[in-house]
Image 1: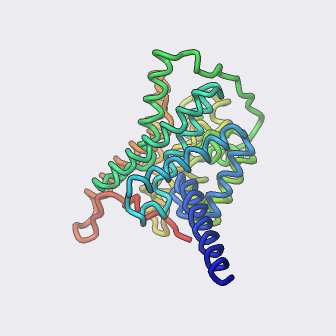
Image 2: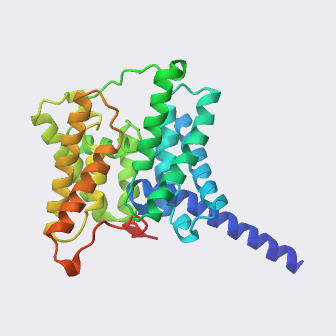
Image 3: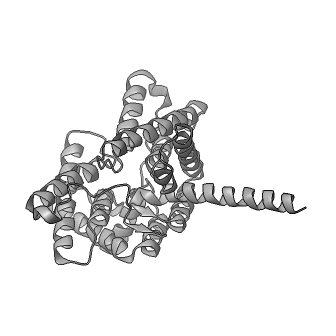
Length: 310
C-alpha cells in the first residue's frame, strides 16, 4: 500500500513538474520565468482563438520534449527556455496558414526546429530572445508562399474600434502573441504584472510611447489602435526594465529603434514578427556595453536568467 502511495505521489510530482515547465515556457515569451504568468498567457490565447490555443500548447510541448530527448541542460529546460519560441511558432502558423492537417504537422516540425535553434544560441551565449521563432516562421512563410500557396490563410480584415492610448497599449501586449482582443491584452499585462510589476509597467509605457511616435509619423491609425506598432516596444521595454533612470533611457532607446525598424520593414513589405524587438535590443545592449565601465560591463543580458523567477 505504501509503495502504491509513493508511486502515485511520485507520478503526481513529475506531472506537476512537467506542467510547470510547459507553463514557464509560455511565461518566457515576455521574459518571465513564472508558471502563473504562463497559464494566464495560455488562457489569453485560448480566449482569442481556440485553434491558436491548441497550436501553442502543442508547440510548447513539442519544443520542451525535444529539449528532453536531446538531453539539453535540465536547468535551462526547467526555466522554460525551450518552450517560448516554439509557442510563438505554433500561434503564427495558425495565423498565417489554414487550419488544415498539414498546418498541424508544420506546427510540430517548426517547434522542434525552434527549440534546436534556441539551444544553438544558448550554447554560444548569444541572446537570441525570440529570434529562433522569427527564423523558423520566415522559413515556413517562404516555403508556403513559393511552393504551397494553397496552405496560406486568406487575410480577414480586422475592424479597429475607437480607442485611446491606454487600451492601445494593452492591445500591444496582446499582439506580442498575435492576439488583437483587448481582453487578451489585459490578461497578458496582468500576467506580467504578477511576475514583475515594473516590467509590466515598462512594457505598457513602451507601447504607448511607440504608438504616439508612430502616430506622429502618420502610421495608419487603425493599425496603431490594434497594437501593431507597440508589441515590439513591449518586449524591448521589459528587457531594460529597472529602478534607475538610466534603465528608462535604455528602454526608450530600444523602443524608438524597434519602431524605426518596424516602419522600414513595413515599407518594404517584409513580415516583421518580433524581429524589430530582437534587432533593436541587440543594438541597445551593444551600445550599453560600450558605454559602461569595464568592471560593470555585461555584453548581453543572459537570456538563461529571466527577469523574474517564481
